[in-house]
Length: 288
Image (cartoon, rainbow, N blue to C red; front, top):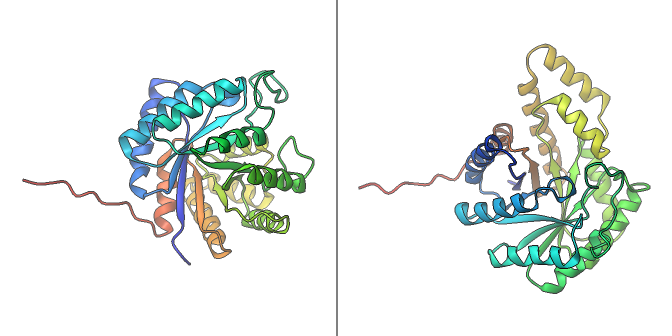
């Protein structure tokens, strides 16, 4: 089994405490030599400026390859492309292009009258600039707005054809879920890399709520195992074992990349990555 390429997702801080947590997370995970790190938008694009600031700081201060999230929510085409231009000027060459979730209080995504109507339109416009490597989202279980997984696969094909070069999946709890999706993508003619998204489970109850919002199925056997581990005071230990085993299965099945949703909590992600055989890069200080 080969050593995987890894990447991490962070989210921008909205409070002083959250800011400290982000930088602690980046400090802890930067030495693990990720291929790239991504920085999210808040729901409805609410953290647009915070995202921009975090992307610039991580790129400038840590030398990491940063993929900035960019969505279609609540902005005109001109405004969205101005944000992309500012990323390019800051030396950021990767974007994760997403439609984005509906703003708070809205039931469904509604395009801005002068904005991009879909992720495909956004990808086409970004591709025309010739300035970015474009990554997109993928859904191994049906997106809440999709009829079924095949509809998601065919939409992903449109995003790839529009100019995206790789896709990062929503998290899932069973490796076979990813393999079925990957095989269906291949059958539909998708040849771009599909990177499995991994959620290290810091809180099982929190993970289940997150899964409910994303349409991710929670296997009954996994729920039972976590409930037993929680009762026995072994939740952290079981979370490490589960996540490492999931990654091992993905690698054995041919995955070459793993993208970790860190939730700005680095410890479990770091332990999983170490268990996969990736050691932190040691920086030798100059001594007199």
